Length: 152
Image 1 (tube, rainbow, N blue to C red):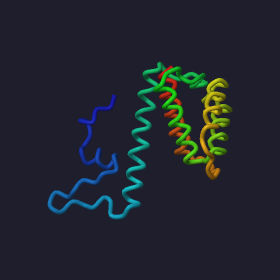
Image 2 (cartoon, rainbow, N blue to C red):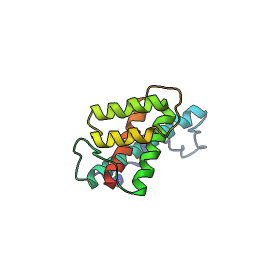
Image 3 (tube, helix red, strand yellow):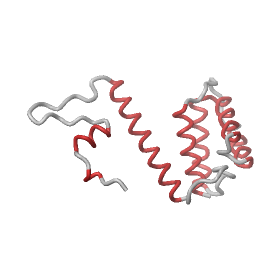
Image 4 (cartoon, helix red, strand yellow):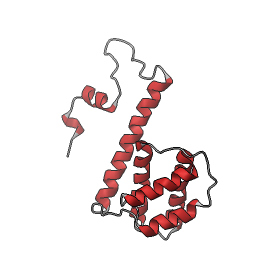
């Protein structure tokens, strides 16, 4: 296990994407433009997602495919599944969400029962412009899957 106390503070700040203020001068503006802020924020979100995935994998004694064989039979599980579908529809439209679910079935992230249940719930959402999902969207979907699987 890594111990942060074993590392220099400057090195840790650099790894986290933060810069240390000079000892004899004013602090450097890390977010001079909105793009600077957004790139840093995106990296922090991805790091948080990665940490969540490790925690969920450890809690579930590893992962076996398909990761999600069926939807959890609880209000929390249903709400989480609907939130995930809303996310997919928002970023890819209803057709893009449908294609993503089919893809997740093909790569064994979803079992047939889970894919069918999600496709049924997807019909309740109004469609949007169909757009392809990117790697970040798929990472987020994998975290939704892990959380749903943890509820089963």
